[in-house]
Image (cartoon, rainbow, N blue to C red):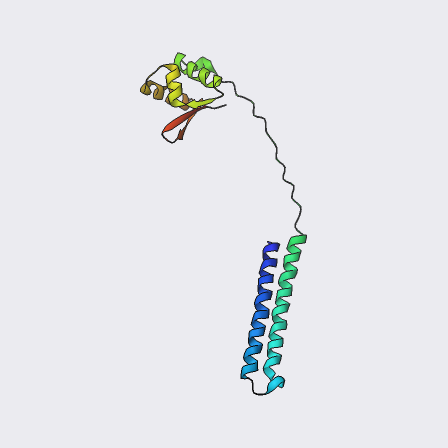
Length: 152
């Protein structure tokens, strides 16, 4: 945030000096009193006021930059214990699905799983529906395919 304010202050400084030069040109062309014209003092007053406000903005920016507390980002890796799946409550085909997924590092395409089990689409869908209901597997949509993931 401080660097953003510092950048804005720099842009404002350029604008102030450009504006001051433009005002001097206008006063030079329009004032009939010459160098003693009171409009020159008005330009100086406006410039001093603008630079004072700009100085306050720069001070705020510097305070934000240098008083920012140092944050330490600590990343902890949590080792997740593999949850052992209770196979006792599963039927024969459900156990096969779990075994195949465990052998394949916990995930595979539904079509590949169907081929390995040598079952039809309907039976595969029903098996996975049951296993999802028991929160043992999860299907994730990938384009036109599903990836079956073993929950651990």
